[in-house]
Image (cartoon, rainbow, N blue to C red; front, side):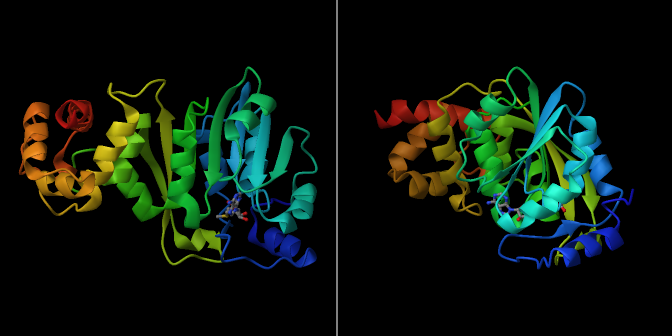
Length: 286
Ligand code: SAM
């Protein structure tokens, strides 16, 4: 049988179905045969495990996942890909395609229905126009998944995987680290895709915590993180004052209570610092 990840085979299938790429849907399909097997193997897909995939495209990664996992459910928004997937995944009876927008779906309900009693992982080459919203939805919805392995733009991968408290960190670094332990697995050149995007990509894996590594009210934690990074070049006293709408004296009291220096910058704070600020916020504003 022809290899699905072979560029000649892919072109043949796309021509046969008269398929044209949609830029708006972030359609850059993988055509490097070494990437999908590696990504699938590192995602934790194996016997006994169910995989949720987002955006299967023509099914190159799906194909690898079906070979490793007990069951694969792939959410694809573009209707035009359904007949293509019917053909490319015809040999598997452990796959289901759901035609929907992943951002609109109740993923907890989908997982409960499709993977009862199974360990579940997520594996996806994400459409880049919705990378952050998808990752945050996967984490914030508190899905019963043990790991999330996704291909994202290299810059986004570096930002997410920069340690909390480093120069390269941002609000997304702190947010992801609240829910999971991120690691950068490997880089993928722009030439591995058709059409080739302007930037390189990378595969990251997020190992999801059963409970957050810091104890505080989650809502307050994210309010503080958002405010702290809203003006990342400013010292924390100024960015919190502007971002939380608090007067300078209250912010000074908050910082002192939380043990955070008033002249620190958001990128220098630890998860514990953000948690302390979140916990002390209600006391200071009370
Ligand atoms: N997995 C394929 C691959 O690696 O070659 C395709 C990846 S391509 C970067 C992203 C895929 O996500 C496309 O198939 C696109 O149609 C689909 N997609 C875009 N927006 C989506 C959404 N909101 N919900 C579900 N799928 C979406």
